[in-house]
Image (tube, rainbow, N blue to C red; front, side, top):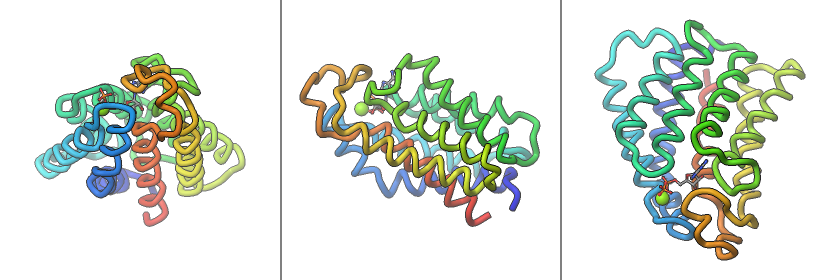
Amino acid sequence: MTLGAPWALEWVRRCAAVIAEHRVELMTLDRDIGDGDHGENLDRGFQAVLVKLDDAGGLATPADVLKLVATTLISTVGGAAGPLYGTAYLKAAAAVAGRETLDGEALVALLTAARDGIVLRGKAESGDKTMIDAWTPAVDAARTAQNEGRRPAAILAAAADAAEAGALATEPLVARKGRASYLGERARGHRDPGAHSTALLLRAAADTAAAA
Ligand code: ADP
Ligand code: MG
């Protein structure tokens, strides 16, 4: 199995499909503790990415694909999530720049850079009830799997499992960042929409790697 540009393209296409499929669910989560636009924002962004992918030539490496996603999300997705995910994909692209294919070590670097980019931009810490509560367990699980000598698909599966558990674990939390932080105690009992979308995007990565 090789995770090259075709895999990255497949991952991004699956991201677009999964976000479209979960659009209403993400909007409902965001309606509970935000303004309801998370699913719509992300869906618009990934649909724009699909158009750009069709028009683009010369996407020779995973970094080229990730960079196109980044610039498209930054220019088409509003709200908090657009710049945060845009930064994540941009930093992920930089972390694997020039590589034709990604091994386990590169995948860990990609995920770590994405998470670090979101932290740099949004300043959220673990437990603030944001997408970081999905990203950080995912990065940690990926690193552990890599250290155990697991294969790339298993590393991404471990990351996706941890992101899903992390998203679930946002439910009892009070939010300290983003719109949900205005709600105080009323945010308890609701899953953070950004943590949920992060889990969806990482599961898409794992699924495409398993099929590669
Ligand atoms: P907005 O809140 O502007 O409407 P979205 O609804 O698209 O933007 O995205 C909301 C999500 O963004 C939240 O569920 C949370 O995961 C994430 N988020 C908000 N602020 C931050 C932050 N400072 N750091 C990390 N993630 C954040
Ligand atoms: Mg919102």
